[in-house]
Amino acid sequence: MKTKNIHTDFGKEISDVDITNLDKEESAKIIELFEEYSLLIIKNQKITNDEQIKFSKIFGKLEITKPGTLGSNSNVVILTNIDEFGNVVSTSHKQSKNDRANQQWHSDSSFKIVPAQASILSGKKIPSQGGNTDFVSMRNVYENLKEDIKLKVDELKAVHHFAHSRSKIDEKMVSKEEYEKFPPVIQPMVKINPKNKKKALYFGSHTAYVKDLSKNESIGLLNYLLDFATKEKFIYSHEWEENDLLIWDNRAILHRGKSYNPEEPRYLVRTTVEDSFTRAEYLN
Ligand SMILES: [Fe+2]
Image (cartoon, rainbow, N blue to C red; front, side, top):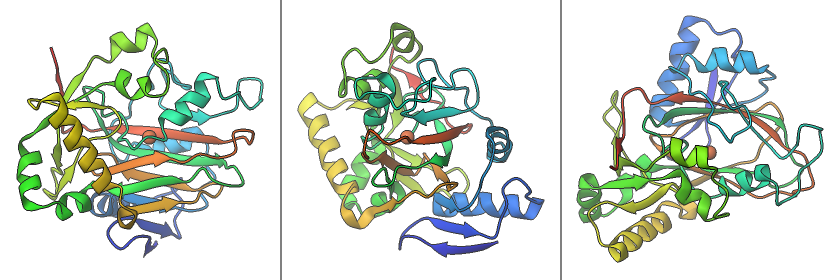
């Protein structure tokens, strides 16, 4: 197994490995790199969904895909603009709106009572231009915050709500079932990695507001933090190639999709590992 840097502050590209045939040392090394570098890129992994599921389980228990998402009730999320007949959907289709919702900076499943640890995303069909995924290390961002802001966010909690991020794309996007299944939850604004104790700022598109601040203070703080976190120097932008496999730590990474030609087919498969160390609180 070989590794190389992809950004000065986080992430590693791994080569010379076959994720369908890992020995114990290789699995342990991948987990160690994941905990330390937050984003891993493994090229040339032409895998089936079952192989991806088996690999993903080395990180922990997998999420069951929620209603309203392709792959519902299984361990995979299908992120695509191709419908069940093999045609590319129109931009008014829910799958296309989902794509646009994912173009907001976010941490996967931060709206859930059990949020996500790792997301593992396999690129099956990649448009010829655009469609990058951008990543920011929120550990790095936290470390670069001014001391007074660090002290402030250390003490704060925020309310995350699935309906909040979707309302920015389309007020009617969230079904009654999704609305009822995902009530607002309270998450810390700073996550501490249980193994290495490193702190990361934690918020994103699902964050509706910061708790115990006035509406204006909350908007001001979230806007300031988002502007700060998404400065060019903090971003690694991944240009996809077919059979890339990306693994990121949602406890320490903010990410977003980028737009691409909506007439070109795109097909990605995600597995998501639960963050077994944290549980949010319900708002009410
Ligand atoms: Fe995502």
